Length: 164
Image 1: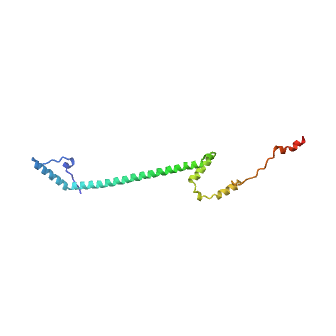
Image 2 (image 1 turned 45 degrees about the vertical axis):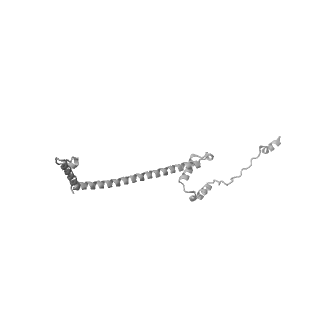
Image 3 (image 1 turned 30 degrees about the horizontal axis):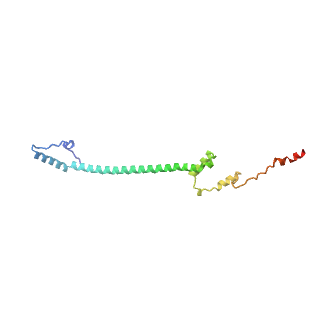
């Protein structure tokens, strides 16, 4: 449906007809009623309603999207803070004043195990213990070789002193 708008309504220059005030008011009323019932006015009202509905839908959709984006950013930030903080917490557990002599490589390995490694209840230490013992190392409870007592210097020199 093709609609044509009059220049008077587009430019807002609607002029009344007649010399007497009553005739001018009547002519303006007639123009308003004719315009109200015209196809162009009805189509303009429909377009305005549709544009308002679409705009409202768009505003609501945009608002929801912004809300979801900010929620995602908050959770992502909280996750990264917790993830980074976990490493520092593990570092404080591993590096204590009693363990100040640990090498950087050992600290790094312990941190990697603490942060990335499996939970303690899933870890199977038996293969590592066997490997340790197979290399000739000893268990912590093993007493190792008994040290021979060194003789006192006086006892080892008794024979020499008898010669004098």
